[in-house]
Structures are given as C-alpha cells and as structure tokens.
Image 1: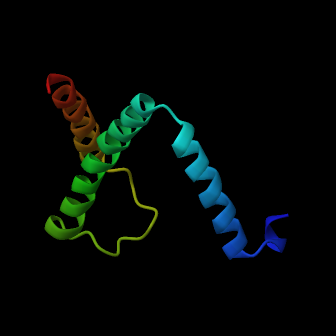
Image 2: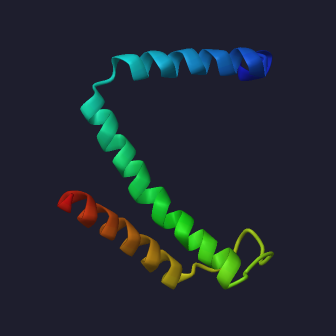
Length: 88
C-alpha cells in the first residue's frame, strides 16, 4: 500500500499528523520525552565521536564484535545524565 503513495504525499501526511499530535500533547510529557531522548543520544554521540576520531576504527565493517567498554561508557553517560538532570 505504501508503494503506491508518492514520497511527497506520505511526507506531508506524516508532517500533518505529527504537527497535530504536537499541538495537543501535554507539554509536561513532551519535556520528559525530550529529556529521555537527550539522555540516550548525547552519550551515544560522545561514544561515536571517540570511536571515530580518537580510536580511529573507521571501516571495520558494519557488523563487528560488541565493544563492552563502549557500551559501558554509553550506559554510564545515560546514568550521569539522569543524575545531573535530577540535581538541577
């Protein structure tokens, strides 16, 4: 069913739906959602930057072994974000 729709029409429909949801959503819940997004993606971005620019692991393929140190750094960043968010 999605193959018959043009990308422009689908993008417009999704944009209208998301705008309506944003207009009628309670702002307190929206702020919590933004804090949750920030707590996940800010530490993840830090791990990706260190991996790319400092450790220089470019081009090791898309499927690599799990790097536990990176996962622990990411989870530690999430925990630190939430601890600091509760302090301020």
